[in-house]
Image 1: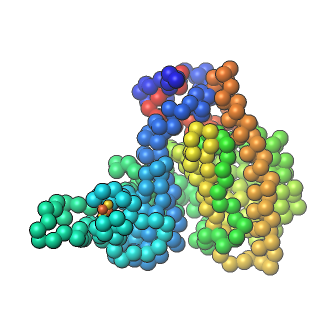
Image 2: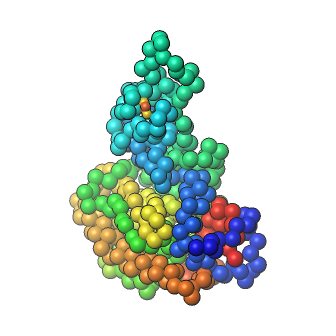
Amino acid sequence: MTSRVVQQPACFDFAPNDRLRALPARYYVEADVLAREREQVFFRSWQYACHIDQLDGHGAYVATEIMGQNVFVVRDRDGELKAFYNVCPHRGHKLLEGAGHKKVIVCPYHQWSYSLDGKLRHDRSTASSETPDVSAICLAPVRVDRLFDFVFVNLDPGAEPIADFWPGLEEQVKSAIPDLDRYQLSAQASALHSVDVKANWKIQVDNFLECYHCRIGHESFADMLDVARQKQTLHPNYSYVFIPSSGKVDNKAYPLLPEHDVMDLHFWHLFPNIALAQFAGPGNLSLSQWTPRGMDRAYRDIVQLDIAEPTDPGMLERRELRTAWARDVLQQEDIAFMESVHEGMSQRCFEHGWYMIDPDNQEISEVMLRHFHETYLHFMQERAV
Ligand code: FES
Ligand SMILES: [Fe+2]
């Protein structure tokens, strides 16, 4: 199939009317887009790897992957975080699986061994062996950085640190969630973990970036929160929305206890595929990451943090009710929307949608969605035409 993606220099110079035209449908459905996204977007941006608690002690490691590129993060002997491609320089075997602790990293294939800083220690050569210079061989490094207790990796050696790529984000989250230090990885067996949705990853992100559909599509959500008074702000490579409480403790979503619970909603979209969210209810913060599995399917992996100590005798029950509502109500409502939109994007008549932009009525405004798309096109170094 001929590519409908026209390659042009990075550009934000849409004429004013063009800025109401949404990202063309071809970016959601045409197979060649995914290969460019891997290189231009996913291999040049910060991707979630693990929670810091999974790297407890020297030699603790977690193996992960970014769209087929195998990576591991390890805590070295000085306690520093390091990340490497998970591939042995000898002949390419994978070095580590899953998570655990290693004093030395030993390749399972021919037992070349590496120290925690990635240097080759031993290649099993003898005096008569013809070998390369051991000091010249080391694992290929990957950028690693932290946002709170979330550990991220970036395959772009020249990537900006997180503090520069998402400027001001850390301060903004801390000010919105002052008790963040009291949260830890959820021990809840029923916590949401991973959701497989038959829709392009950008459709799933788009769905989270506007609340135009909330009042109609999420009756219980819009009963618990005052969607009309939401406040959206745009920042370099991220956006933030605050939705205040409706004040109804016995709302149609789940019960709230104002003395102990968070009452509002905070949501951040971190370009390209990450969301941080704090929902009403017992103290919490979730990180979601959408990962494509082809053009028409993506996983949303969810890491849930909860307040460590119960604040009151009913807290655990309220938390369970929130989880059940998020899984069985809110998520199901959104999945139906997203899968239908993906089908719509595939229709031959549908070239592009339209943005609704309204600075005075942010409930219906899709400005965060447009911000995402403009950043996306900038990374893709393309202009939508
Ligand atoms: S491939 Fe790793 S030691 Fe040979
Ligand atoms: Fe939704």
